Amino acid sequence: MKKCTILFIILFFSVLTFSQELPKTEIIVLGTVHNATEAYSEETLFSILEQLQPDIILFEHPVSWPADKFLDGAKKRKTPTLETVTLVKYLEENPSVLLRYYDIANRNKFYQETNYFEDERNLSKQLGELKEDNKLGSLAESLLELIIKLSKIRDVIGEENPRIINSAAADSAISLKHEYVNNNIIKLTEMIPELNKFNKFATISKNFWNKRNRKMAEHIIKHSKDFQGKRLVVITGYEHRCCLRNLLKKSEETNFILKEYWECIDNK
Image 1 (cartoon, rainbow, N blue to C red):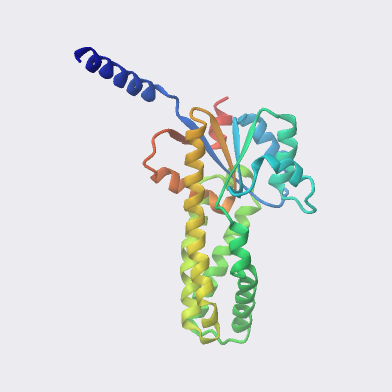
Image 2: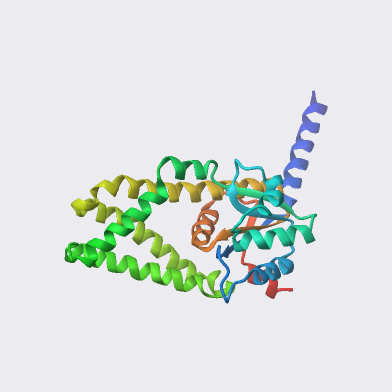
């Protein structure tokens, strides 16, 4: 009996010591633009990936899609994004690098079932018409003006180079834009009778944005455990970057460390 107890204690502390010595997974959240710009092209992203040398690339596609079909599907797309074009080239030249998806499951199904993009366009169009006809009122006018200004700042950031897009300053500006716009679009749909019909959409939009980012972060953490000790590069639209990094920082998980892409390149 004593021998069994001693053996159990030895095994317990052996496992504990081994788990403590496991190397941490490196997670690099790399904000990108979906359409190439003068400052951020396919060649730019390809160069960054070449320098980072990731073990695994996490791509902003729903986890419900088959990642092993990426190359076949990507080559059939008529208007591929900057990320898609770059990844096709990079994965073909680096076949040992693994690709995994991390976006919320059934994302596109949600958009279709809620008429998301149609409601988004109609709300934007009607807001513009009310503004042009001076029918908003002073408070609503002020809210809309700030929404427009913050959205313009977002657009200006999107024209910058990867180093600026992936900076703390850009993250702060994008985070402020999300917080203010999501909340005040709802206020506008409550305040203005002509926009009341969009209140449900505005609320759904805010909630889905938050839910989607939470799920993305959860999936990233899961992948970080599946590939413990490896380097994961998370390719994401730059508006998600600040949300994902904040959620990962707040996580109680200790198996990974967050790094910036430029830190890894500069330290070479």
